[in-house]
Length: 462
View 1 (cartoon, rainbow, N blue to C red):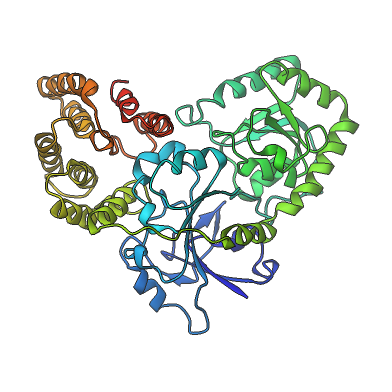
View 2: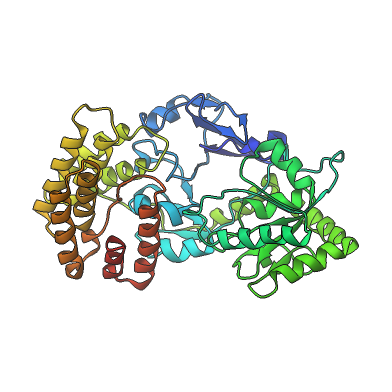
């Protein structure tokens, strides 16, 4: 029996008894883990933003000691302190790095292995992570993503998902093309407000389920659509789909030139559409999470170099900065960032991150404190772009145009002077998945792949 300690309640995908040869416990705050409208209380009540790994291990039941620690989405879930001392292999799974990359570049000391999609492998191997491996982390949730015999497939094409144009820049034009087909009589419906069983029933009403990934990855919808008996339509440029489904038999792959034609063809030929959907449904059963876990365990069983060592400054800065994009209160990052600053008084990065944490805290004078920290970062490192850009943003919020204009001029004058990663490393205002940070994440990916920090400087001029 292999024992897994994780921040993810794996039973949200399949019942515990379906995971043969695997026993797992989840941890987290008592009321936090809601998945598709269903609450999965953690087995161990523990707040990782406030507690240490040793404290987490101390509350394990006496008959359970993990063989590994599996942490999903460390850009969204804060890490316990002391992760670098984890006595068992620590495995990280990261997904939305296209949104959160500036926050997570410093997490490399905490993981023996980092798992991500194929694009992520290319990016994260350019960082000091010791061992980055490809793994498709997604599946469907069998309690809700299933066949509902009472539902009638009254829709030709259905899509339900994130419609935020800032995040889904690539998908938005395809949604417009899909909706335009309604004018030709095609029964299309696009939703962003269905979850859980309602989402499963919605897909059961569609003959075809449209999908377009954000990173060329097999995403959740790629499994949910066939699990609900609809025919999956996926972009032909996807880097992973052919490893899971056979094109022309279990999935339809479209491109710029044939999207509408393929939709009309498969809607007109209902027998073919139904047969392909059935083939996809049968195939996707192989990818239930209770079966995917075997592939995961086989993958991580191969020996690697092990968790890299890091100094206390790097540990504090990495954990504190990542916490800024997580669900944790931003004030929870302050102790780590203060520690990092005290350990390296001439490094501007802790000051920039600390200012962001304070700005999003409940301190009465947080605007003034943040401004002083940003200004101090630019004093000790005049070429450090994130602090200058954030100070300009802060002055814009405070309606101080003279100071904002000066910061903008200082920023422009320093763009061509970038000579190291330290000059450009750090998140921007506003925090989270803002348009500025999404652009920053994209530029950072390009800069890492090119090995040129100067390319990241372009993000500060956009």
